[in-house]
Image (cartoon, rainbow, N blue to C red; front, side):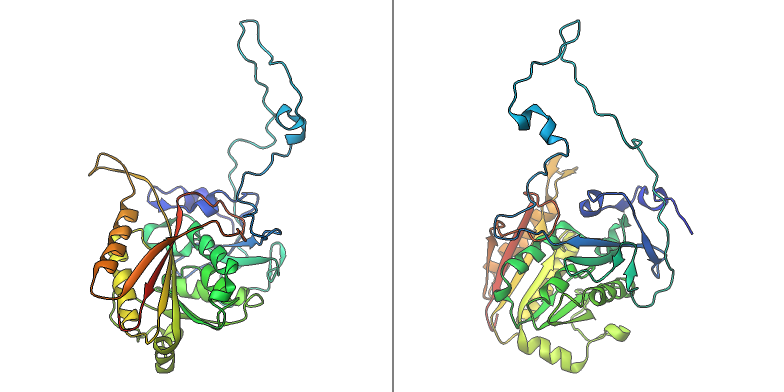
Length: 357
């Protein structure tokens, strides 16, 4: 079964993550269709070979023909002018058509456990994280894509594994589970939470695909920020009483990546954080990775970053409230472990909640 990619990536109401947009488009293999009929892709994010603190891979890559250009040889070359005295620029011949329609091949349509093999061979590569995800989704399904803020958070975890060693960690709005999987390389127990049966099943499959990388246990669970409690009828993703007690008694860190893109959800996120921390009997650090996105605002009649501005107001209210919260923006100069574009708009915040807050 083949479906032109344009059929599901060119809709006017869809959103496409830059992570998927900027990846090489040589092959887009669809492993299955999820319960909502959306094509599910499988991508591999390889660890960079050099992780010594110099942030490898963050700069522009050298062009393949760089050795043949004056910029890299140091030779002075006189510019070539045409008969009118205008600069004549030669272009490399195109090796591919300017627009190529890619037709993904659906490997299987079942919703059973993850396959052991993918198109590139063994899905359990020791030098990469393998993630199933969708592409170009409506805004309500953006959690099924991979976002740069999740990769930034993963870099932070990998740069300071001792901070989370042996800990119990809760991820809110985990999406495809990238950050939780990386967290489980250091933490003992990770509660990987989100809402929606399709999303939670996808997240669970990703945990299974990458279990060879993890040391700790990742438990995928349903957690709705709009509900006051954890216990729900979410089937295999429901909380047990023992898990709920364990969460409140042992959680020392909460993480979240790119969850503050809608004001209503941002408010719900901070209410959930405040409610959870009020029941923790120990100091808890909340790490929030966010990307500032500039959009044209009709209200301001200019370019603004309204979602980020609302996030900052929520942080300020936390610090000014009666509870014992403090917040700081962390430096993002830590090493880059995964290959993606670490843009300046990516930020990482640490919010500290003290016992009894």
